[in-house]
Image 1 (cartoon, helix red, strand yellow):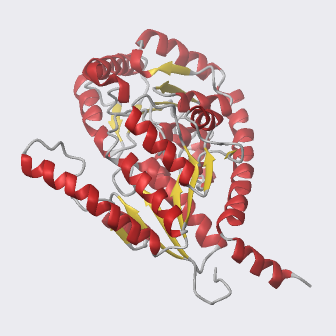
Image 2 (image 1 turned 60 degrees about the vertical axis):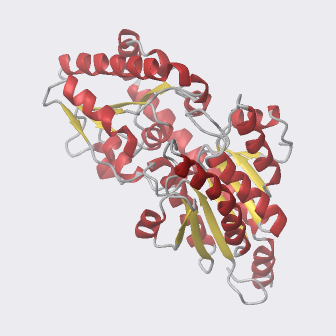
Length: 413
């Protein structure tokens, strides 16, 4: 991808990437796949949460998102508070300098415009605002691609998210509810499109993995999460977590009593204590834990299972993409929207109020329709792949118009 002046286009990717969240890294992998296929000459680097991990895994240069290394630790001492405040000023300069070196910056998916999990306004929302404001001031096109959004109650966070969206040169959303949320928060979304989550563009495991080594095994994959509610649930976070964990443990015990192997999966490094708590509470050789390092690893596990029960959004996507029937523990509207879109809207359960008996009832109903639902998922996955092809075509037109013109000239008779 080289403009008329012969200089390769410089593309930056931005977000909480390389920080242990498999879903975020999966979104980055999808965008890098698009760039390498359609614009192989592009020079790509990242401004992200875990630069060492991003460089090691994806082979691109990466810069740390925050100057202050203790950004996500609670600051109680005067020195730490002062350093954190100074970091905000330094980050404004660092972000602008990084943006200035690029022609295009892509924010690949992720729930960057939502606060469905605990979030402070001067953390990532502030970083996103710095990015989009710098892009507007320095005439670097910033694209929010298939991102998640939700109506936000906290005023400072809502203001930062609203202005970030307004200042971006391109916006698309991973579901209609996200677009509706931004419209409700005062963003003009008349030109914004809705496409599937970027993870649907990732490769699906080969057919040998999809069937498992010896056909159906009876295995149930259970995706867990260190769930404490959302941004508005801080006062009862521990109560929510305890209820979620207790209900999940009771559900696992019921599966074990039926002789079902249960494979525990995570989507973020912070979920490890939940796995440990379940293994400790349900002392059975039927319950094991996987160590997944990517969405591809998760898909391999889920493809060999009969059924999946999961809470994390990208755990759900992995199950859906492999065509494995899944029951969703929903903590935000994005999960309900995803399940509706894929034809499994009847199989949702509230994560804040896990009722093991009701969950088991829904699980058994899901398994009775397994063959039918696998057929539905195959059709919906084909549709998602086609829609993402349109998304990448739209990105070309919005971000690389000079390149598209050059391509058209080369292809003209």
